[in-house]
Image (tube, rainbow, N blue to C red):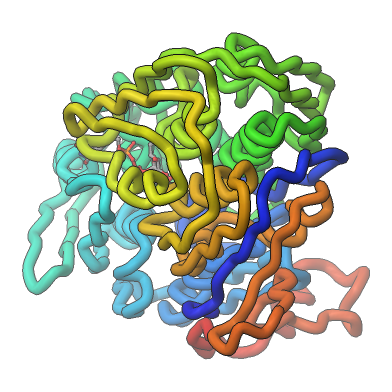
Length: 463
Ligand code: EPZ
């Protein structure tokens, strides 16, 4: 990770052309830990080449298993000899999704020791629902020294009601329940596409999960999961970010390799604002308008408007005619980024931690700004594309956590955008992994044979 890189944008270029979306970050960071539920070899394809996947690959290597990238988007995981159920890898602390190893280890080993996940700057982000679910299955959970200790003599299926349709709790409980005795039902389950993707992956490995994508998931426990090959879904948040970038520049962009229905809520809002939206089997075309209408946006759990597109949408609404009300219902305070987009001229009044009043159209002008989290960073990029003059975005490490090759993708659409290092030199951080397993000599061989030649696990700390 290149923490001192900055992204520089000279805005007001209309974006035109096509952009290809990579695999979904929030599916990747659930499915990689889920592979450790299986005693087998998993090949996970269409992984995005982003920092969170690099960190997670190093985290599972630190547990003593073989995990190698066959190419930047394909990871081979051999967890047949996994015996460790403790995650001590420091970098994992900074990554919320490392908590999925709790469910995976608890399910497979009936024991787990995992760092308590950090919060982030839009709320406390507790894990009480995860713990409540594990305890319902018969586990004992203790916390001390910033670690969560979980253990169970037996895991027995039960009925679990989630007070909040939590994505993380739904997936984590599923990871434990796949090995529980009998049937577990999760009521008020999250329905996000990455929840469905994780359930589909686990079923490929031999799990028996029904109802993922509805608010009632039924899991019938099995003794053991085997390996398998799986291609993860495209990233609907990356796709939505490029759709909003097209709208804010009045451009004409086709976002490819997506599942259009995953973006229905955004497409409806962009149409309401005056954009033209065309949908095909695996693409959405966004044609911006010279004048945009203000609209009200309320974030909801899927299939409602996604909270992960709220910052980017707020930037777009700053250029619309009139007043828009943005209501954040998923997190208790996801407007921290507003202090930064105000520097670019956006007029957003956060009356409460849940409501932002956006006045438009505002004159967006370039400035020096800093990303405060992943989607806040995306909002700064989106606003910078519309700004008159130069916008310099620091802390792009947050953006690299969730967007593969963002500056090259936007440059391919006609944006005047570059990345510079600490010395101000233009750099090209094309997608890369800290190491790529060279299996040319085993091409065409079985995955077992390929896995047998994987290097012994050693942890490479991401740059
Ligand atoms: C996932 O976070 C995503 N992260 C987030 O994306 C996304 O914003 C969020 O789901 C909502 O869609 C990953 O998938 C890695 P939640 P998660 O549990 O699972 C409360 C991004 O930018 N809650 O659905 O942590 C919680 O405080 C990231 O890609 C509890 O109260 O979200 C929040 O208010 C940001 N107790 C609400 O539920 C719990 O035990 C939704 O959180 C768990 C959650």
